[in-house]
Image 1 (cartoon, helix red, strand yellow):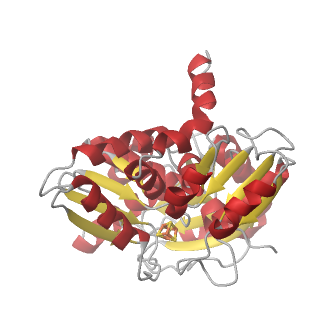
Image 2 (cartoon, protein in one colour; image 1 turned 180 degrees about the vertical axis):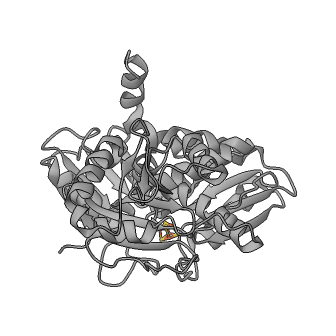
Length: 405
Ligand code: SF4
């Protein structure tokens, strides 16, 4: 089986109180032991991720959360971690004992609703706890293996009905800004931050998206870009550059050639480009003593000239002339409380799914804290933001004109 990046998979959060039978439900629908199933209460103590191919939906990741419902301090911590899993889920599956909906189940349903997260209720142990006919959910006895096909078909039908549109039909990266059959040039520096012997997943994704739209795609290092442009008989329909070379590549590119960055493309695909552009305005309003959160979605090894730890803080200090405090966070954790921060700068999020980045944007909004990302920030600091977002203007105008938006 060809493996699919985790960030492109449908993320399904599996939630339920201790002993509701989450793990045995997962085993039933997965047809194999993909999670620990045990009669011992509270076996699953943290979120366990498990990839699966769920035909015809395609690749999914289950986020198997700790059971909730015990009133100990540890139980409360488990519930809080469980709720955090909702931040990266595309859909939630709540496993209940029969149709038992108590305080915690209501809390989960409310949190899912607050996030606009679709939720499927599974009424497990329906043989022991009778479920009223009008109850809105799927009745299951997850220990009855003979019921597997019926449950699986019903469950998949619900998933397909409720899965977000952008997961079922992922948006294009460049297909709506380059005409079919157009030509695209990618400028990829092979500096000390480039992985040895391979391209980054987001660069590969752009190539694939271009090919899907019948485009010819040419990749070139920044050092060979000027030579390539001079040899082309007709100018490219789009140039896509790495954010780290905007300062050198943009001056070499005639104004009539549309140009953007990989980061901008992914800010649009994984987040909300207009909000990240809006957030970049805060760069001009920073004051001495302000705290800036730099949030990275993975714990990669930081290179000498790391973009988040070195380049961006240095550039912001130089451009603003302010004494700022930069706080770096790497990995899945994102602060619950953002009130202390004046600005959040999110990394490109290549390892995260769209829902994770949108959750971070929403949390910043709820605290009134502007958020931008590396690519938008770098372009803004160097004065190139209007140029790199220009290829998307006609889409914004089309959306604004649409009576169905
Ligand atoms: S963009 Fe973010 S998730 Fe991707 S490698 Fe950099 S820090 Fe990690």
